[in-house]
Every structure is written in C-alpha cells, then in structure tokens.
Image (tube, rainbow, N blue to C red; front, side, top):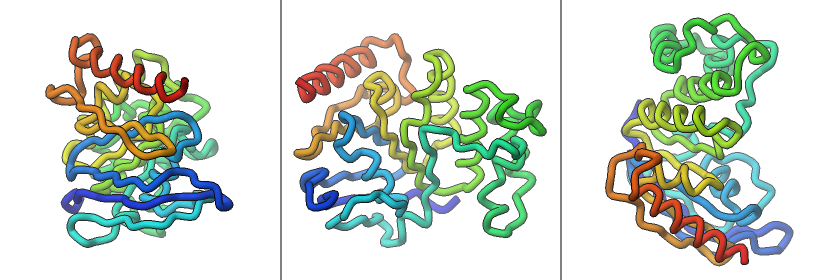
Length: 242
C-alpha cells in the first residue's frame, strides 16, 4: 500500500438543474476515519461516489484533490452497504474478484493473511448462500482490503447487521484499515461516535462539524463520551428533520 493522502472535495452538485447540495468543503485527514451523516437525499452517497469516480446521476461543479497531488479514484477501494458478492463464486473467488477482473494473479500470501484476519479460513470454499450476514460482510471487507488501497470509501457497510455483529465488524474494520484514509457514510449516530476522528453532518445547505470524543477509535459503546457524542448527533439530526 502506498502512503494514504489527505483529500479535499469542494463544490456543488445538482440533478436536472435542481441543487442536490450547496457549496461544501469536505476534508479527509490522511490516515484517519471521517464519518459523514445526514438525512436521506442530501447527497452523502453522491459525495462518496464522486470520490470513487462512480456514476452518480448528478452534475458536479467543483474539485477533488489529494494532498500529494496524485489521483484519488485510482487509489480508492469502495465497499457498499450491500455485500454485492457473486452468488455462484466461493469466498476465495469473491475476495480475489478485483485481481481476476484485471487479468492478474492474486497475491496468495495476502489472501491467506486476510482469510485468517477476517476469520474466514473455514469458509474458503463456501458460496454466499451458505454464509451468515456477518460472514458475508467479512468477505466484503476482505475483498476491499485485497485491493490494498490507501483510500477506503464505505457506504453504510454495517447497517444490515444486528447490533452485536455490527460492533464486532466495526472493531475489525478499524484494526484492518489502520493508517488508511477512510470515509464512512452512515445514518447511525452511534457508529459515527465510535469510529470518527472527524464527524460531519450534511444537509442541502452544507456541512456541520461535530467534535468527536478525544479517545482512540473504536470507542467503547458504553463510554460516557461516546454516548454523549451520539446524543449530540441525534439531536442535531432530529432538529434538521423537524
């Protein structure tokens, strides 16, 4: 993996002439987790997909730049809310999908390490229908990590999981994505309070930054500073929805 850069996105977006979000400036600190919250339809996923250079359906007027001057999208790995596993492929084939699509040989040593770190060694030959929801998400995370990119873009990757599995997956993601520049789009104030080195709430008018707890991530679910941050975020989101 190359060094993880800081990233800045500045600009506006519109759909068929209707403004999706007002001028905003979003900075992702190098090697840190940034969490982006907001109501449905404010453009959170659009921001994520702009960084990944994926289709958005929106017209973007602005700039995306990395602190080292190199490209962003070509150094990014994207993990969606749905695991998007190929139903006919084994765990091994799903994890190595990117390299196979590029006609490259998978790094067997890296694949082996990820199988162990993600607890998937015993499921190597299984297909998605034979896995639990948490196991499928671990496969999706391992596939993202197999790309070994310094920039990781996560679109509500744990929202479909039960609370216990979600917390375990958050812990695993923080461990395995150490030193990468990570952007998480989420609707969950608790998730942002646990994971964010920086937390922003997005509205059509722009961004509101919320100071995260000063403790290291992933923060304890029951810690007072985590609960206080979660409560502050929830009040802010409820106020915007009113």
